[in-house]
Length: 492
Image (spheres, rainbow, N blue to C red):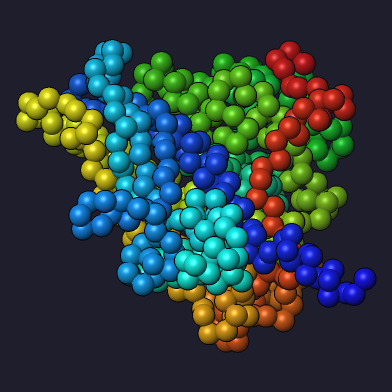
C-alpha cells in the first residue's frame, strides 16, 4: 500500500482537531448536567422555606432572530459576516418551592452558550461536502474553534500539574532540608492544596484548607478513625525507619483514641468555642476539605486515613533516601486542559454568578412585597455576560490569554494554533527545568515547534501523532474488585 494512503486514513479517523471537538461534545453530553446538579438550588435570606430548584437544562441549535421576530438556523459563515456570536440558546427547567410545596414551575431562557464549529451542536455537523459548499463553508475546514462577535476564537490548551496526584520533593527552609508531599485535591468546583511535611527531626505536619498550620499528622489520622496506637502502627509498614518516625510522632501528641483526636482538632480549629461547635467544625473540616476527591461523607474517613498513611510513608521513604523525589516535569505528572475542560470551568463559574443573581432578585422581591414568579426573577445577562466576557477578552477566571484570535495566516499556522499548549508558569522568570526538552515529551510534544524569546519551552505544540483522551475511565473500581481487591471497611 502506498504510504500516503496510510497517512490520509489516519487523519481521516483522527483529525488534527479531534481532541477539541471530542472534549466539547463530552462537555455538552455530560458535564453540563453534572454542573447543574452541583448548583441545583437557590435560597433566599428573607424566607428560609422558599427556594428555587433546577431540574434540567435544554440546549438548542444555533439560531438567529430576525427583525420581524422570526427565528431560523444560522451557519458559521453567516455569523462571521454579520459580526454575531455563533451560540446556542439555553433553557432551564426550574420550580419555585415554598415549604416544600411547588407553587410555580417554568422553563426559562437563561442565556447563550458559545458553540464550537463542527461540534455536535453545530449546524454543520453531519453535512455532506456538497451541502457545505451551499452554505459557503470550506469542505476541508476542520473546526475546533468558536465565533464570537464575528471573530474566530481558539481556546489554547492549558498545561497543569495533575490533580489528585501526590508530588514529593525535598525543600530547604531556614537552612534545613524538609521533605514535603503536595496534593491538589479536586472535586467539582472545589480545588484545595494539601501539604504533608516531614521536618529534619522526624515530626510530620499536615496542612489542608480550613485548618491551622503545624497540625500533627497522627492527630488527623486518629480523628479519621485509626484510633489506638496498635491500629496506627498497623497502618504503616514495619521498616525500622518508618516505625521510629511513627513512635516519635505518637510521643509528640499523646492521645488515646479517635474521640480525643477530634476534640484536639476542634480546639485548634475553633479555639474558645463550645464543645459541640468545636466537634462539628472538626468533623466538617476532615469531611469536606481533606482529600475531597476520595469522598465527603463520614463513611469515607477510613479510606482517607489509609490514603494519608500511604502518603506519609512515601514522604518518610524519600526523606530516608529509600525513594526518589518526584519529577514535576515528567509528563506522567501533567495534564492538558483542552476546550471541553476549559468550558466546564467557565460554565461552572458563570452558573455560580447566575445563582447568586437569582438569589439577589428573590431577596429584592421579598423586600418590595412582590409575588415571586420564576419568569420575572431570571435575568439572562447574568449567565451570558460571564461567558461572553471570557470569550472576548481571553480572561478565563484566574488565567489570561486562554481565548485567542485564530491565526489564519496559512493553513499550517491555523492547525498549529489549534494544537498549541500553554504552560501556566511566568514567562518573565527562568524556569530552566520547565523550558528544557524532557525525555517524556517524546511522541507527545513537538521537539521543534516553540517560539523564540521569553516563551521558549513554555509555549509548546502537541506532536502530530499524539491524541488526547477526553472521556473519563469509568468502571475501574469494578475491574479491580473482580481481581480480588477488597474495599476498606470499618473494622478491617
